[in-house]
Length: 278
Image (cartoon, rainbow, N blue to C red; front, side, top):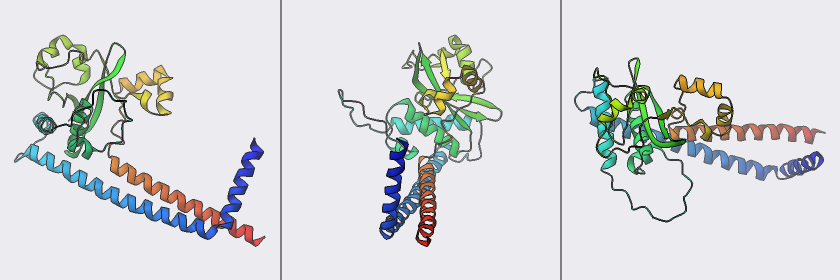
């Protein structure tokens, strides 16, 4: 088996040496395409950023310097109204589910899916643009996860829960906004604040900060260690928005692939020079 693999690589390497000029042309063409893609993606990222800066300006109006509970609630209200006002195309009743494509913040803002995930995504991006730290919270019930998505935003030293789909935040008896843990601990009190069309399944009986099982490789390691998984949940560790800026990360990936191609070409060139010198 190992000899067969070595034979294949030897033949491939010999072919590369024989077709060196063609190989260089192909690599240079790929490099030009990757660099061009990276530049285009960064321009798209900047346009998306300006789009959300405009949304935040519209929400704040003349009170651009305001920060805190009033600010995040106003931004959430504008996001809710903006997405609710978009006419969604009719959904086919019987059709095989398609793989979920990678959607940018721009996609969620201009063409929302109509589900809570789009609302949470747009609100999170808007609040991050406004200068707030955010983290995503998933809700579950009776063993099922991801039945609803909300976010938490940091105001000062506290986190507050925001449900963009229902334009909903929860207030404690003292009047201040609370986080998911507080709602979970006293749902009998907080459920009095939900609107009439609120889905009764979303009762915060189960909440989590990252569905680790859906993250390749890393999720498997985390889920196999109950102690590690418990520690991450206890400390509210959510990685969902670490890779939030889709265009920026795709541009970064393009640059990394381009650098890898340059390195591979340089190594092949050195090996070829050594081979010809024999």
